[in-house]
Image (cartoon, rainbow, N blue to C red; front, side, top):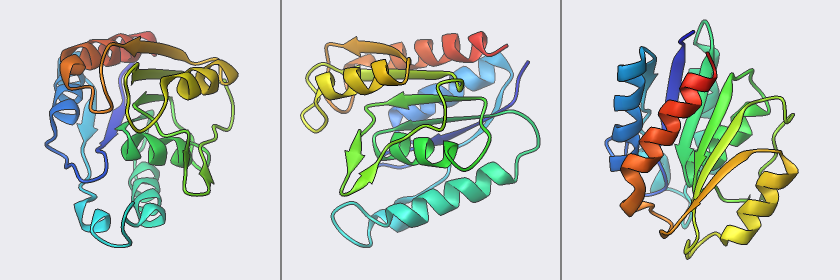
Length: 172
């Protein structure tokens, strides 16, 4: 089985970011179509986090336009909005890198643990404590890989792509 993946970049990043590009390459190898929306226009308004609600609305609109299975993937703010859209739209799975557990009054929630969920997070994440993410993952019965890295997961880009490929393969 294949489907469509929407890869959402983090705050102050872009659709051609290293991790987004690596995940897109994994999609290509496995026969999944993918897209990488650009949220940079929304990141410049409403500092310091940008227009979170408009990011969610944009991703929800893109998800609604897909016929067939949809997987949402994202890094940091992209992970946050992917989880939020999964509450409103049917998705086949979620792949989250360095996900914020909460964001200025927003709570990351998943509708059900029945949605396959995989997380990669850095032990040394300076923005989102690894212990908080591990507890959140346990509550949602998610697969989690904690790696020796910081928030950007820069030393684990290939690892993230490999884990994503395994995740997509497991959805078949």
